Each structure stands twice: as C-alpha cells, then as structure tokens.
Length: 311
Image 1 (cartoon, rainbow, N blue to C red):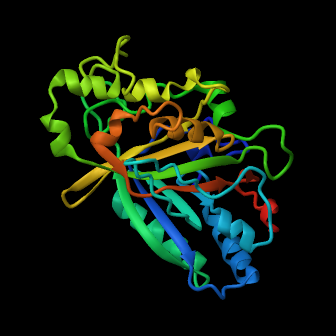
Image 2: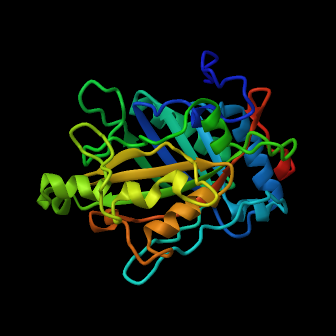
Image 3: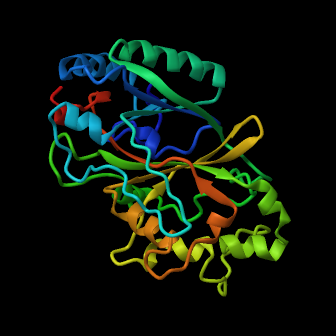
C-alpha cells in the first residue's frame, strides 16, 4: 500500500506523518485482550502487523505501557501528564496501540481495519474506532475545523517540518521515529454560534474571513496561547488534526507529532493556564475527551523498524 510517489517514501520515517491529511481517516485503538498476554504473544502480533504497515496508508503508534510490557525502553516516551487545573479539565486516557488509517474511501478503510485487527489477534482487541474527514471550505484546498477556521496554519514545512516532527541523531531504531500526542476534542457548536463574528475571531486570534492573524488579539486567543516561537525553547510541532462527527456530536481529532513530547507539553500547559493563569479561549467552546501519548517507530526497508522493541 505504500505510495512510492510520495516524497517521503524513502525516508526513515512513516511517510504519512509528513504527507498532507487524507480525505478520510480512521483512528483505531487496540488493547491487549487481558493482562495475562505475555511479551512473546505481543511480539508475534506486532511481527504479523509490520508487513501490513506502509507508514503511509497506515501509521502506527506504540503506547508507553506496551513498551514496558516488552521490557524495552524508548528514551523520552512517557505517559500523558495531567494538565488539568482549577476548572480546566484535560483528561488522561492512556493507550496501548494506536493506528491512524488514511485513505479516500471509508469503505476501503473498513477493510484495512479488519486486516490490521486480524493480524493483531488473538493478543489484541479493538478498543475504540473514530472516523474523521477533511473539511474544505472555498477553493483554498486547506483543511478547516468545523468552526470554519483553517487548521494547522502555522505548521512548519520542508526541512523545518522534518526537524520538528522526527528524532535525529539518536541512533538506529530511533532516528526517524516520532512522538505523537492524541486528543479528541468535542465542540460546543451552539456556544460557538452564539458568539458574534468579532468574538469568534478573538477566540482564535485570526480573522475567519481571511485567516490573517489579529495583532491586538486578547491574551486568551488560541494563537497567542500556542505561538510556537514564543516559548523557551521554541515549541514547534507538526499538526495533522482532522474533524470528526458521530451522530450530532462533532469536534476535532487533534494529532501533533514531535521529535519529543516537549513542544506539545509547553503548549498544553500554557493553554490550561499553568504559566500565567490565563486560559485559552478554546476551552469555552470545546473540551478534550481524551489524551494519550504514543511513539511512532521509524521505517526500514519498507517496514516498521521495531528493533527498539526487541523485534
């Protein structure tokens, strides 16, 4: 399934991380069927999974608990911290094995999900599935949040994206890997629609009409809270978020890749008001339901490089 025409096809990372978001996607969480599943069975399951993972149509993340279960270590990988503060709730929902399935047709992704599921049986079972999609407005071609605002405007590109998203200089089995933060946010669209146009712009710190940043936006504006160059050290990461909907509920599946968890933690702490007591305005129109960290292994010879896990 790996797209040999992708500019990232021959690089040591899972190319889907750098490739543009797909028209549709599925996020699938797996967990061991029970606490008694031993490391040998897990390694066998991951060995069956590896040939199915091209890193493009299927991007895989390994949770900290699974790394520990295998008696392995990935420097810098740890469980998702508790960022909650006062009335700001940021749930911690640790995950074991995460798959981001990317494509152009949800029917095709169902069949890919089944192949992955069967490869991981009997050691793993499906815990949760969420479908997402690319929301385009106008002719810009860019993905938008369901609020209408463009998502990922400040994403680094080219070599800067590679430097921000992937591990470099750490050695074989680590170089080309990535640390990903996964949060499912649910929007209160009624609350958002009650805001006037100027209030909406102030919440994000950008004008919906032209996506231009508002210089005198309030300190609560999302752009002000998460300006990557405003941190010390700078907190650059690569966002690959996509909207989701389930019946009448909807929101954003926030996905952020980094060379470590540091940049995400800097931004999340400031959003929740840990730095200066100022809470990101996003929390008044949206809230996270989940929060987990995963390590996305590098690629070698067209397959997942799992040597850090003893495979």
